[in-house]
Image (cartoon, rainbow, N blue to C red; front, side):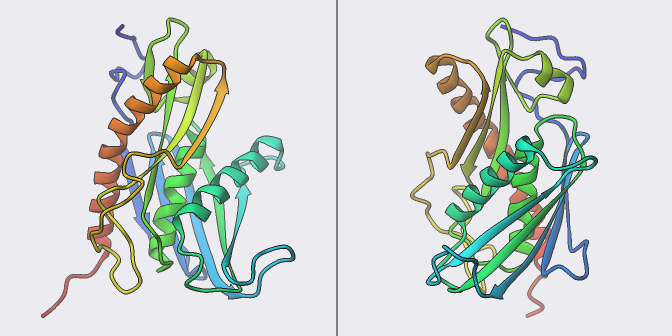
Length: 240
């Protein structure tokens, strides 16, 4: 079923994407990621020696700090911190730098929907900018279910508020593996068809959820292509 969207997009159409790197001089890596009018700046610090209590000293620890664009951090922000942390823990090669802590600070610049996926995309880009060794990259997208049970991708804030339910999905970038010393090396990915992270708000049937996953996986190809191109522009060409 076709859905009329205020901004004129089709149900499968993403908002314009933009990404820039090396924004913060004191951070080891940083990236600004925008999806439409939603923008998040991610800064990576570390790896720094030592981990907090109850962390495994044989691995790197991931710390995520969420900074809202206004007001105090609340339950939703804490949940976002945890979702980002668990996502990053699954893609970072934690055994390369044992007994260290990698801190990722996420500053919300503007929220016009799809905030958590935007933050995850920004964090992944900033990790690459910092040279953190990764198993693979990840891209995130929001899929919404309308009252008529139609699925729309990348909803705006106003669309999110009118949806029956929506889900944030994170998929592996199956075409790109980031290894130490070779940030654009190609390698097959065992998680090619998997879902790294899933967070749902509202109620939807299993059938509708699986449909969202299918649509989200298709959209992740466009996000992966954009991320790959932005990284290729970032990496200096070999003068030889």
